[in-house]
Length: 330
Image (cartoon, rainbow, N blue to C red; front, side):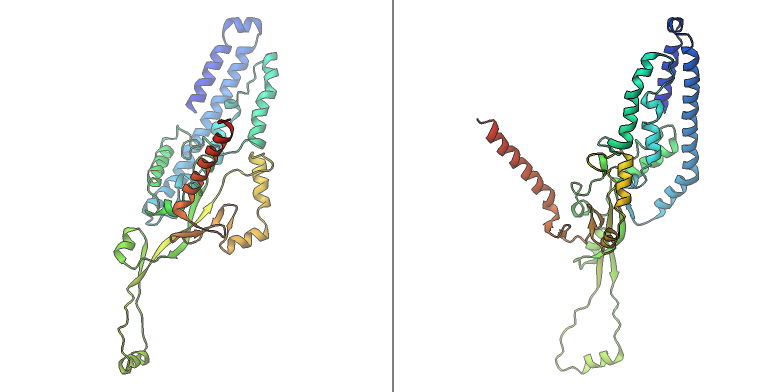
């Protein structure tokens, strides 16, 4: 917001020059009124952000520090603030709307209105350059900035060591246009790990098996003629299971603005898709993900997780090479 305030200050200083007001009287007064409203807007948004941080974000941050489980990942994506991002990056003052009393300014209004309409109808948000924890935070709110930086430091470490292998970034994106997409914990999956030390080393949960046999069963074991050594089950290892929430903009016919994306989200709340999600199936790249254990069935086709992204990369390279041979060797 400081950069916007400096921009407004330069604009007023420029508009209040003597030679501009000789040619068009009233420009300085209009610019002063404009600057006062802009500064009032900036101050109001900063105060609202500071108040919200103290009343809600600090308590939530302390609760997350005490928690021993990673229920959400990445945290900055889960907490992505659309309202603050729009206010910070696409407010009327940032888009260049002014009350300059000149004919050229009147002519430029359709261009500025087009920018606003593109945000509402055409341009997707988050966009490819969006950074969660930066674009949705007011920089003057220092406490909120520190909290976001702490979350980003926590997000550098995934929920468990093999998380990126189980859920590769090329398929489950969390950056750029997916800056508000995230994973949320939704249960556990049993693994093939039989060793407690290995289970804990992978940051999984080890559950001790405590079998209880009835007196009759114990007597049968004692009187059995074919005595065989019974393998003692020490326990089972469980890893977290996650739900992927894809919040990228999805509109209609290339129109991925806020309104088409909202309409598409409403239309996606249909009984057939709700039943698919409740059944544990994927819907449009999101939903409850299957338990990963070496191989994952994402789209009814068994594909190895570690090779999924590399295979796509190899295919793209081969296609580029074939096109090169066809067109550049002629």
